[in-house]
Length: 442
Image (cartoon, rainbow, N blue to C red; front, top):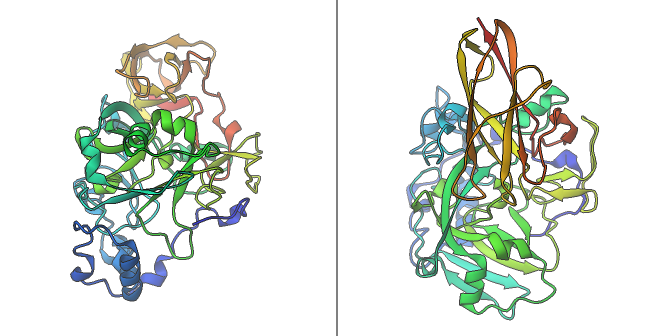
């Protein structure tokens, strides 16, 4: 579905009205069965059946409404660690506490969840079967193609270790100037995972697809269901970068991609923000232009020029850019903000650093005096360019209220601003300010 170029930002990221759902009947079990049989997923039939039953058939009745106590994350998504922070349970948004991220590879049970649209039976770490799951290739091609996802297993596989990060990660930190719209993610909308699948370029070659010379973008759709009165979710990526880096991913950390994380097939492009890794892939469109779908503009964009915090903006293609490549960034995992630590005793500071993978991380630097002096920390070099670098340092703090500052510099000289709010935008995307962790030493 096509969108509205330059749509008014006042409509951005509107939330579904749960009050309208109270008391609606839930769909019967028969409605949800046999959706993933070998005959394939019939999206139109599913939409028609759920329209007749009410929104409850989509699983949109918030579990908070139905339960006496707010659910923990293992109740929101079956198989998840119960310690994850539940931002929303209707369409799951789960954040990982930093203490659970202190490893090179993030286990699936603690990996954050950020979904935009509903899909029945998705709230689980179990996978959907690939048999009968169809993916079409259309647009500027010699002729349309259709692929059964199970065929991907027979093609050449590649694996990347890569950072998966929501582009809203750190949104709450913009509140130091003006609070941004949307879920107030802190630091845990990220993880480092191993992703494997088939290169988009290999799929195109294997199917004998001839792409038209005028095609400059790949637009990706999934099988999830649009919210009422909203456009169906899709994103565009630069075609040259997609052909070089994108995977039709089928496995994360050696396992079939769980339903909640976009399996059986997810389009994943290492170095890009998480929203661009479109889940439950159903269609690949090779097109001349970037989509003007609402979810691509005005959503998931940042201004090209600095914007005064609190000032609205009407996004156009010329004054904004999509949330594609990740900014250079480091995150402190330990100690936690506002932690009590021992004065005059060694304190280990640990964290991770990453960028878009186009060059290496050169250093992570730590300051205990408000940025007057900086010291390099110990870096662990990962196995690939798209993975995060774990780092650590030992400091001794005098008694009192103190701040630990940390920043990353990569080989291109890209680093983090001392004041992250210089990149303020109404939706709080792409925070990468210098880490500033307040502690009390006594």
